[in-house]
Length: 301
Ligand code: HMG
Ligand code: MG
Image (cartoon, rainbow, N blue to C red; front, top):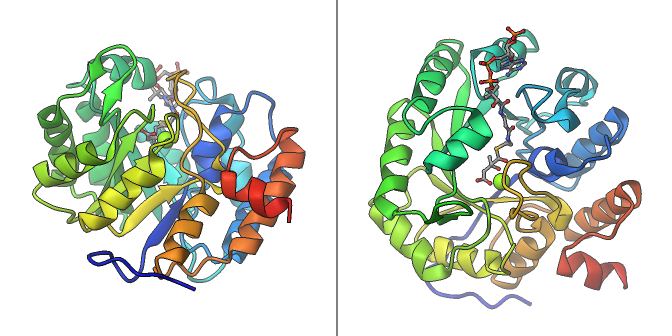
């Protein structure tokens, strides 16, 4: 039984980041065949977009050093997109060699995180991204952009909204088809989400990417949906975090999101039972239970 609320979309695209944002923080290396099966199970559960891995420096994120091998093992399904994270031209070259058709760049809204995550300044991160986006577009790729630390930063405190908008508008201006607003450390609250989307002039080309560190991810998602956003990032099982921001815990769990959207009568095309069994299967491989409340409730039966 669904109970609709006024002012919400009919359909939401869940942009699944489990294999990338979820796994990148795991210290024990997950075998590549487990990653490939994870991605395939996500597609089987109805996902139309699964962010598969990252072409970052392997020393920076050792867990995803097998990106090329993973892509070679993917059983690509028609109608499913498999974007990858790319920070620079070296990463783009690696992705192009493998026939990738969609990439995501990832910028910082704050000076400190630009240094810690990208070894760049707030300004010089654009010197890195501009040629990546230009070349990717020349090759016909779709380019998504993230902006991290949109609500607060562990070193600098709350992030000024105008600073986020300045970075975000520049990324969109490069030709990115979508901008995902990242609450990397999960400190945002619903009114802040509404204010940030409003400062962008509305939801056009915006997606949201919430980490659930302070338990705000679902409330923030509802605020974003009310503001007109229709793409929501989530990670199956709620796994994840950012290796360069210790206070970042897992993303909003896909199952928690789907439970809420299903209850609101919003279409996602996702099979909740298949997502939960995937999370239970992955939890056994990672050696600890999924942090998702919905997985915990449903897995108990
Ligand atoms: P750098 O050290 O400044 O790199 O790192 P460089 O350009 O000076 O190059 C140094 C060497 O690295 C060179 O090799 C390059 O070829 C090599 P050498 O000539 O010395 O032999 N190199 C590479 N090798 C393979 N692949 C590459 C690559 N790039 C350079 N792509 C860099 C700069 C951006 C590469 C580094 O800082 C990096 O890899 N950072 C990635 C950090 C990361 O992945 N963080 C997690 C993802 S972001 C996130 O989780 C947030 C998000 O979820 C949203 C949210 O929650 O807010 C997206
Ligand atoms: Mg993230």
